[in-house]
Amino acid sequence: MNKIVKTGLLSLLFVCCGVLLTGCWDSLEIEDRALVLGLAIDEAPPETMEKETNVTHEKGKLPNKMIRITAQIAVPGRVPLGPSSATSGEGTQNSIWVVQVVGHSLDDALNNLQQQIADPRYLIHLRVIVISEAIAKQGLDDLNDYLRRNPEVRRRTWLLVSDGEAAKIMDVAPPLERVPTLYLLSMVEKSVKTGKFPLDYLGVFWTAESKWGQDGYLPYISIRGKENILIKGMAYFSEGRLVGTTSPIEIGGFMAAKGMDPGGYSVLVNVPQMGFVMVKTQERHTNMKVEIQNGIPKAYLNIKLEGMISEHFGSASEIDSPDKLDLVEKIFAEDGIKIVNKLIRDTQTKHSDILGIGEIVRARQPAYWNQHVHEKRDWEKIYSGIPVEVRLHMKIRRVGLKN
Image (tube, rainbow, N blue to C red):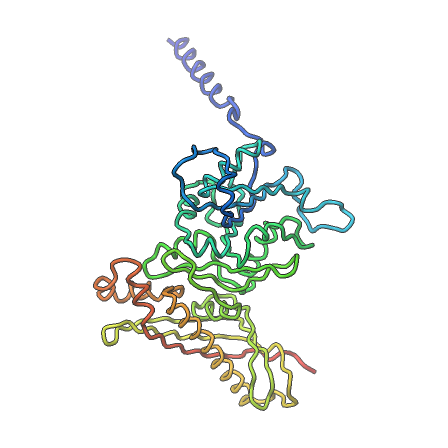
């Protein structure tokens, strides 16, 4: 009996070892993958319809519009880890491979891309997607549908809107970084850390767009010169379409209205009898509440900022007393309220609640919400006519060190 038990145990051990020692039978080396780092999406010229290769369909009844995608594919072993040097002899062309294709949809274009490259394409390292302003104005429903369904696309990918042709962004590689996609990624992530832009990954944008009481926004960028990219403002949406953009200083107003830290924006204020003073925001604290008055919501924004004086010029009068400091704080608050009010008026005109006031109404005034809001479009119309009262107080904690 012992022999039978031992034989059975040994047989079971051999079977288990066979399963554990099979190895990576379906492995695929990284050198055999086409890793897409960045994508740029533009409208395709009308003449491309005739030159299209029939990869996913036969000629016949097809959508009239076409898009052009520009893909940055990493060259294995050549993606640099540090900045370029004048004597290295290596540039962007040696690090990445840029391929342009057209298609009727994003997936159709990516299938056409696969037809032109040997290795299977992968989007697991896709970090930046740049779309042109024209594409954003048409709506992002089709684009979002593909990206949501694809398990390779990370929710921490950045989606950016370009004021011009998105493909040109893929060619920008300043001396600090030879791979345009990595430069774009570094630029937006460092802007978040320094308080220049709110954290707005692709997943955050989708979350805002899926809420009935809030609309999404994206970074709005522009090329300056040959090697510079400017965060030009915020591109905000309504009903899934781009409806407006802000100025760079209004990003600071938006972050103040939302109470987003860290503070990073500076405001130049003209103080009577003291000249010009540059005040830098360091901390933001905001309380938002909503009341129902005369049958409509009224929003209150109570913004409290803390900052420092970083520069004073244009007058011989020094800031050397508490009264003068109070005056600087007062003028800053007045200018800050103007910036926030302009942002609110513009977004109300375009029916885009990027501040998320509707979510406060939904959470704290459920009776009103259930009676008047039956789809997202209902709140966007209501938002355009509600009064919003903004109160802003600046407390200057530091005035700088001076001999």
